[in-house]
Length: 231
Image (cartoon, rainbow, N blue to C red):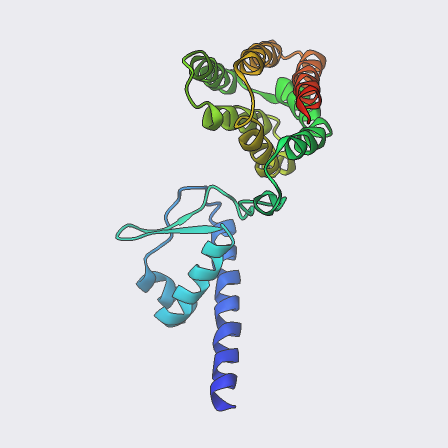
């Protein structure tokens, strides 16, 4: 019983410490990739032992809030506390039906995201989006794996929307891209490249309605493709 009580106290203390670390990150306006103070500094500031601190860091790492780099330190994660698989795609059968389901979910989100991106993207944002578009096209026409850059493109459109909630929905978008790009043929990939080009052009000229419709067309083309390929 005594051991159980000690364990309970330790867990409670580590949870309090985890909350304190989150408050520290927020109060200092720390961004993804920023390094937390070293263990000694944090222990002194929070009046805790190293064991409690490490348990709190472990908890926050499991929640995608922190990342521990051995020999370097502890950093704010770029995942912003978002689960790696918020839809539980890992436990669903990876097939054409799943890809279609995910695309239908994206239809409810991404056209609006693209419209906001057209309204809010800066010239710097647009320049980087063009780079991603070109990398996407290059990967497709070279016959290489374009999953990563496809995911980056859609994630960046969401980031350019200026809406923090849409930005945090990127894992949903990424899940769909990673599923669909593993089961499509070259014909579809070339159409995807053209759609990305049109989306980028609309955002670059700050044409919100055009960006909305370009993204809508892109996703509907994807939807029709997977419907036609269903067994």
